[in-house]
Image (cartoon, rainbow, N blue to C red; front, side, top):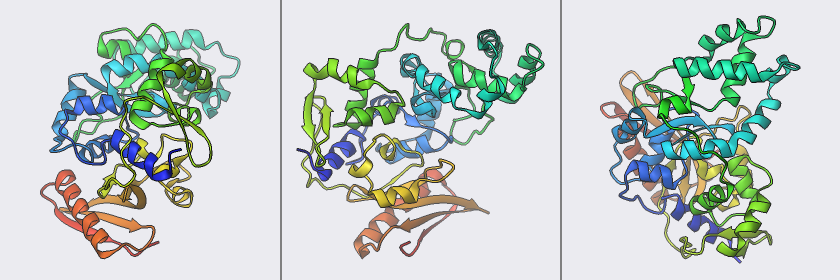
Length: 364
């Protein structure tokens, strides 16, 4: 049986959050099976919190050299992944995108339409030149003048394997979300078939020990129980405190539950707090409700002793930058001082040259 602290320390070890490590950014992105990237900057903060001496130019260089990309993948959300993982993961998550599209409002506007020719046209248009959805919509409307142009563009964005091209996603560069096909951007074909066994093994390496339900929440896929059953001879099994069966790689790190965990400021949208059905290994259920917003925006979180103990937000104004920290409960003076030091380090990383301020609010 693995208790909550044992699962917490295992997760932090896999996520490179027990201590900052000296690791190339590309290797870290691959080990983490990508970083959620709904906004351009969180992956940079995510690596800053994990890697010793991380330079944002290193990750920006991976994107501009097309060694890494931002693409719609796990859970139907944008992830920053290596080029190789994009080619391998996109076929695996195609059912997630198709299911997501079927439930999207735009799908109702295209009901009864044969999407095959629309997707083929959209793929050709995006392969010819990167385009925003707004630029793509009128071109598709020429084929289907009686249908909503925005809905047509959304169908292509959901169902055709695409990436967001640079400069968007490059630290400090900006740019509109502009799409092209995965194959044209990377100059290589997608994997010929989904390798779900490899997907589950990669997940366990980055987030285990974990249940089938955990793997399904992380990926957005369903029916992974059959995949895990095929992998059983290669896995070790445990139970959590509720009796749920957990799976793991035999040689994966499972540190002593008493292992110290330093304070960390974890990025917005970080998979640390999103990649399990049962998230009690890192955040209490009452606190999970505090960070889960109606519009799906996940704030930056503060870890104390390995568990989410508050949120943080960085704002800039007229040459100054402030990290505002909101604890969920009173902290000890030593804890406050440690979090303030980590916030000051974040300001030095994210807003060099700006006058830095740390605003630590009273507990909510």
